[in-house]
Amino acid sequence: MSQAAAQVRRAPAHVRRMLTLVVLVVVMGAILAPVLSGYLRQRAEIGEARRAIAEEQAQIADLEAELKKWDDPAFVERQARERLRFVKEGETAFTVIDDTGTDYTETLPGMAPVADDVLAASPWYGQVWESVKIANEGLPETKEP
Image 1 (cartoon, one colour):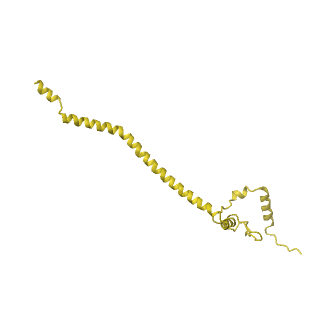
Image 2 (image 1 turned 30 degrees about the horizontal axis):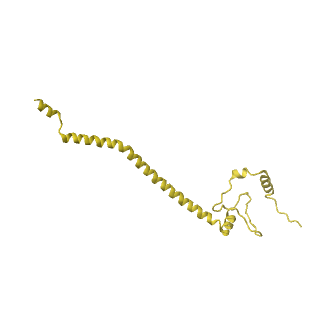
């Protein structure tokens, strides 16, 4: 009976091997899971960094192309005329102002409009000149002989 009891208690060799294999697989999974997740996360970060680098290189190429435009004197002249309203020597620039004092000149592309708060913060001599212009409005023009 002791031989029968020893055989009942002892598992067959293939069950012990299977149990050992399962334990090894679980231990290996527990060891490799954090390493694998770290690897996959780093690969995703590398892909994101490469995408950001490609976007910035495209932006740099656009800015360099725009910078090259400024080497052309005709482009610089056109920008000065449009944005800064510069004129050449001998030319006359006109700005039409109606009786309400509003500026009829529309803002051009690339030119920022002047806001009322900027005009309010203008220097004292600009405010004096505006008051002189307003004081003269509505008076008939006199022709001097």
